[in-house]
Image (tube, rainbow, N blue to C red; front, side):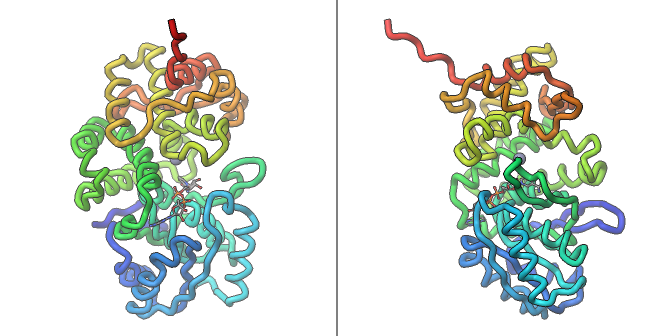
Length: 365
Ligand SMILES: NC(=O)c1ccc[n+]([C@@H]2O[C@H](COP(=O)([O-])OP(=O)(O)OC[C@H]3O[C@@H](n4cnc5c(N)ncnc54)[C@H](O)[C@@H]3O)[C@@H](O)[C@H]2O)c1
Ligand SMILES: [Zn+2]
């Protein structure tokens, strides 16, 4: 299956398929020659061989480079090390740089592609569900700094995205579920039809049945692609994709990044943000009930860890990168396809936080 991100002369295809399609897909975009495949120490041993074979089979001469794994290594140091290796290996402006890995690898390699020689052709081969439905589409690249996540980077579109669904076979169930948090977000954003479909197919998607999985990924990519086509640099409508993230990021920040998985934090965050809609009279409890049920059906949590406290969550949103002029704007889900950008007050964040914390333990009588 193939989709397209329409950005004029920088439009690119999203191919949903398997790793063996890498070489032939790239050969449609660029004349075969040298290219560099970058992966990490976890994914390379599992999947680099198949990727290299496919590239060679299509006439490319690939070199393999490795970067360290994990969010903790999504740093300027890793970026610098990668750029140094690229320059030492004598890449030129025609040398495609291919990322093989999850969102962390894609963000680092994308930023190296954007910056090395002021821009190398960049190819995304996402190998996590989260990267397939979210990180690999749309051209956001970058690294973390001690000041916060994703604070250094650039918008830089790939020339090709190949969602290699066969690589998901080696992904841990926890990482897979994390990706489902972003699938749920896309379903909430797109509207009733995707939301209902996901409810009807939750078991099949969870079981990674190929047809259901492909449909889910395709619908997410199609939704994100049309948002990016309208608002590439997040001047407006693209901010809708932050649904669940205002609160989700606050939870991650309070717990320390990594203790709650990102997709889980987003799922819980959407429930809290939906509670704000209820408090405003824009939604009723039937909506939060439906959202809660689908969240659970996808194996995602609906309450935040008990050690969190309301004031700390409210405080954590003060660090939100999307705050402007002291005003916090969130993408509030009032129903499927009814997500709107709106300024939220600390009192409303407090309402959201209360909605997602476990009820106080009752005193034994
Ligand atoms: N650029 C964007 O628009 C965008 C959007 C959303 C998220 N992100 C970024 O994406 C990152 C999260 O991405 P992620 O969830 O993919 O995390 P990740 O890249 O850290 O991958 C999770 C783990 O799974 C491993 N892995 C990857 N593919 C595998 C496979 N097929 N088999 C076995 N193991 C595999 C990875 O090596 C890693 O250990 C964050 O840094 C986030 O900021 C970026
Ligand atoms: Zn996210």
